Image 1 (tube, one colour):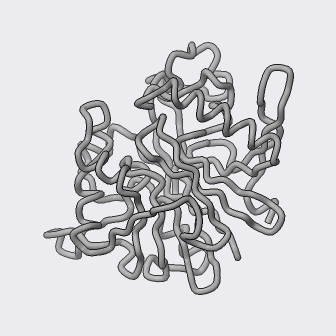
Image 2 (cartoon, helix red, strand yellow; image 1 turned 60 degrees about the vertical axis):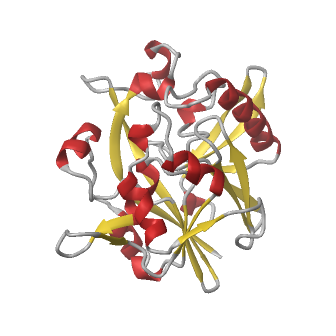
Image 3 (tube, helix red, strand yellow; image 1 turned 120 degrees about the vertical axis):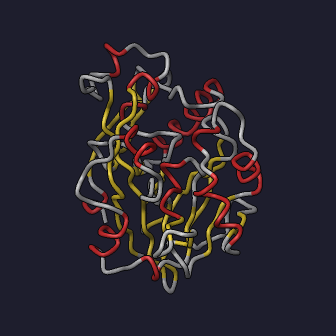
Length: 280
């Protein structure tokens, strides 16, 4: 098994929205803002090469939305999904499985692209199975008003129409050395992959833990549909992460790719940060 960091680009989001009720004077210590109160964030995916499988976890915001939509997110950086795949010697056609932690636009927008003449959509990963779960798929395709703007039909429905949609049915057995934690605070049935790599457990933290700045328990995103449930889920997860020495792969952290945590007298706190390549 080989693991590869796939940077799909960077964007900006309102700092207050990313940290909920926590005052700016506290969260800005780790995540400084620009003059518009916006913080930069990564959209970091993970590629797993395991035998004849090439599994991509999430795929960023994509490039098919119009300028009116994209200008709100201040896309920046000199990397994208395709250049990051090519950096490791792969193309989109090589991917066999696309695992979607959830269907918010910044996690699944790269799943679907325009065809050459921009008359219809086609699969970015034409040879891949796309993996969601029934509970979250229904949640995304019949969205509540709070999350409706995050579930874009152009990112979602074409997957089903093209016959590429598959559903995860249990926590283990989908891929080798791959276990799934289901959490419901951020959105219904978000899936958090736990990957066993040699003697390590590498956790793709997705939006359960977007960055190191979200490690303290009250630091919960304003985007979460059930913030008190996130609090409970995160507390349990971080306790396990500290006890079992998980490597936390951070999808949105602009500054740190991976981290570990430890138990302190103030609760679970950041232990150290590093890149994925440093531990492989």
